[in-house]
Length: 317
Length: 293
Image 1 (cartoon, rainbow over the protein chains, first blue to last red):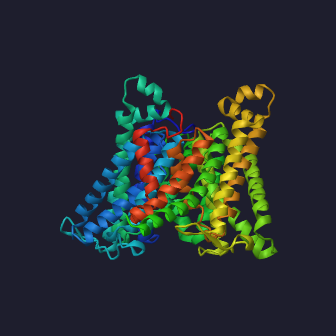
Image 2: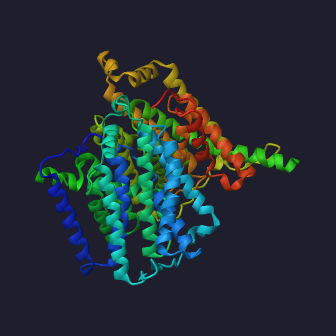
Image 3: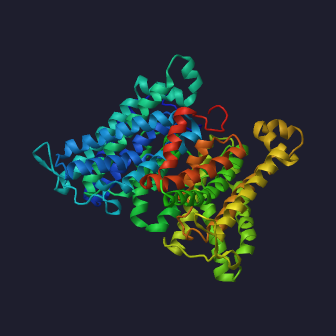
């Protein structure tokens, strides 16, 4: 997409990006003293989800319109693992990630056969298929969802039923996911991804098998979306159809767009903005406001909050 | 297979054809718009819903019946489409087409949300017009007159659209502008106006489908969103290369969906997506599509 910046090695890049990290961690450690921890945990899970999504749209130029299937799918998988199989939280989450990654492998393998708008429509269609599967499958309990999922005891000695401990856990999970994405973007692999986004034909002519890169990025994004979904299920202790519905796929696009496409910290800001909107509004109002924000962002605010800030401050954020 | 099973199969196929009529009408509109604008109109489902609600509103508030609604509703939806194209879509043609996809997605959310606030999620009933009530025994099933009407009228509209785009002077301009807008403009044809009119026509088809659908599906804010996702899959399967292709694919997939309801009911609402995956494996450009992307 046209208005996305390249992550050039501008002088002072490292300093400013580490500052962003430090400020973010500081705010997130202090935040539970100011507002509801459950609200924050939800925002953190959504932020990780959006970062995973941003890896595709922002750095490979692939707009997935079905990312809810990875988040919600992993959610169902880990909820089932924790509740029915009685797995501890760390294994339940790992199982969720594995399911999302395998799903990502199949979906990605199919979807990267087409580009641009078709790619979006294919991911949307396959996600809808997964939605119907979860709606019909008996283990998901249909409209009720999987309820009363135990949070369990992490590594056998960290009891996640305590809200403060749970918040710490979610924060650590988020930071791990965020760091992985940061590392990927700034690795040689990430540079090839950016090259594909900018000009796929040229990347091919330079000898890169672009389909392999796209598929790996897709699976990685799916797995990280799965990590977000599995963690979210432990926070709310239920897995439901909401997380696999197409509206969730739209929401993650919105979060990334508000924050700034292709800005590594953009989706985090976007997730908190959308989280706050949903906290204040209800039902149809949310849909209308999200629609308006979509239209406004696309027309006049394509850089998003972080992109605009970054341009104004002349800093890579 | 017993006689009963065969007649059940045939009956479901006929009912499937009716669903297919809606797929064909909607994917036709998408294909026309995509051809000229290179935009996949995400608002198509919401405009379909709007068409149905306009018909319902005309009857409910103004006492205007089905037949006038069949004309008024597409006109209003088409008019709204022209305004949308002029004020919003047009600003983004120079950018990646994904931005217009996101824009129309936003428009869809706004429309759906407004109707959700106003009417909630439960559907409003819309009665079948007097002249089309009743049904005919066609041997293996009672075919409701209204459904027969939907099938015939949508087939006529689809073929008329195909005729206009494929066989008339206007259509040749349209196809030429799809191939090379700059050149057509150089020949003195007002391409931007043609684009606006095309978008209006495409969404008017969605509005028309909405009125047709009002008595069959309950008129509700969500009636468009789920259906349009299936139509996207139909579009991927058919490929957006030809108008006739989207008509044939639409009807055929409706019928296949109907068949699945008998043979393997659990898969009836996933079969179209499964077929999409299959087509992607065998012929990524779609059945009637030109080479990728």
